[in-house]
Image 1: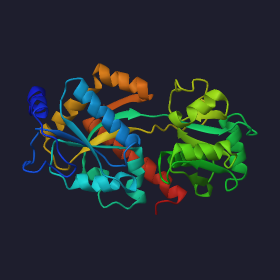
Image 2 (image 1 turned 90 degrees about the horizontal axis):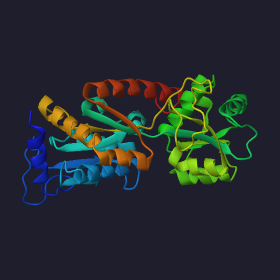
Image 3 (image 1 turned 90 degrees about the vertical axis):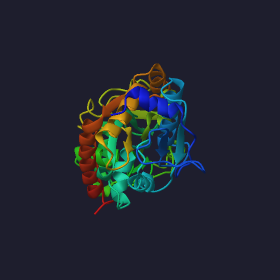
Length: 326
């Protein structure tokens, strides 16, 4: 295996590369660790793109490398980027991904599966927040569930894209509450801002999104915070209980991690894992976690692979019950 010093020395000497390979006139050989690229398989400005660019900045500012490129491959919940990664032979490429991609592989019937590429590390997680309009006739998650169970079709729940983290959480909560997931009236919106408008306008009964989207409105009293999805309460909304505290055995984190190309050598995989661990251990990464409100969920190598397998099973089961996957 290349030493950390050899790997990072190669990165420091790296030329800037385009999304599909080296700059004109530069020949890239498989296994060449002379530069690092990070693919964000989504449009600029979203969660995967933001995390990739934070990682890029931390790697460079902490002195682990001087030249790291982030590029975007948009479409289909990340599975277009996953397909591209499955055809790569570059050991110096990481792809950002997360829980949304686990569901998108099935909802988009992707020919490339997560088991076709190499797990490197889970990095961070974001807490999901379930809210209701300020004038809702209930004050906690039990009250929402009571209304929801009485009339699932007449209880619209706002969230992000179909099959994404928000709908997965809605489905898991429905199962825990004894509600048929196939009866959920889930209204997908393209972003937290649109679902927030629907909530403030009284167009939906409840909403699910990240704490960054709804937290300020809960703090101001414009929305009621009903529950958070993680095992521990979230510092952004410390008075909002967890689902587990509220009697529902549901825990979901909108986690993100990185994958690498298929069929890479053990030594090449360990080089990338070591780089991620060194990034995680830096003061700059700790500051980024705090500034972005991210939970530290580092998990690497085979342990991360086992976690992914369990998530694939859990997500597929709920998407089948919802009716999004056959």
